[in-house]
Length: 134
Image (cartoon, rainbow, N blue to C red):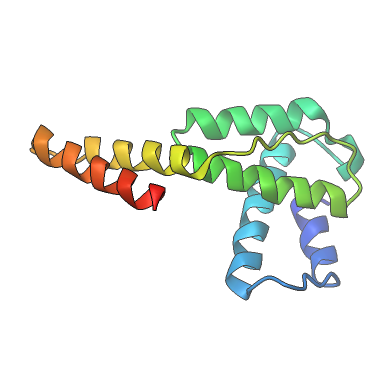
């Protein structure tokens, strides 16, 4: 039986209070993606998950080009999963400064817009900064 099947079978018995159904689904999807990644690499049990599996998965997310915020949310979901399932892995979830994270995301989004003149891009960034400082 794969890790994904074991998790799904046991997951029906666990209750996650305090989260919306949409948030529970997102977290479950993130954990399932990690477990599928582990299954492909031959991890046979939850106890067989090691630090290098976690680190390799996070590294893959980063190389796939996912936004920093998305990788951060994966880390949070996996930290909760490891705690709940008593998997002994240390998950370092760096605290992000919201303004810095959003600034980075907005900058990337603006860079993807073709034919956006520099003056308008700078004005958008300036207005965003004003909003964060108020």
